[in-house]
Amino acid sequence: CEKNSDSENVLEQYPKNLKPEFIDIVLNELDRLTCSSKPPKEIVFPAHLSVEELAFLASTAADRSCQLQFIHKGPVKYPKVVR
Image 1 (cartoon, rainbow, N blue to C red):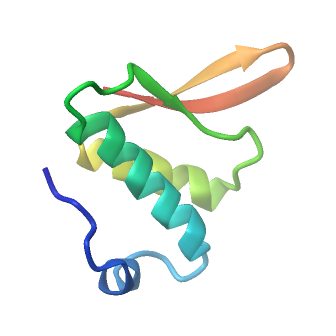
Image 2 (cartoon, helix red, strand yellow; image 1 turned 180 degrees about the horizontal axis):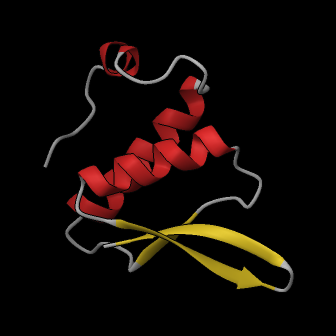
């Protein structure tokens, strides 16, 4: 399980149009899902992500053998990542 110890170098390999805070949150949440001794079943993300953020989330999840899915809460779709 790879941890992101040096976040400055890690962030350089990701798209420049994404906020570093968003990249950090995604990486930390996916670490929690894939590296934790008692991982959650899923991680739900905010509904208002941009197309670029969703693409990053999907590809990063796939890199860790996870899937991006969507859940409906009323008229709103929320992205979630599951193992």
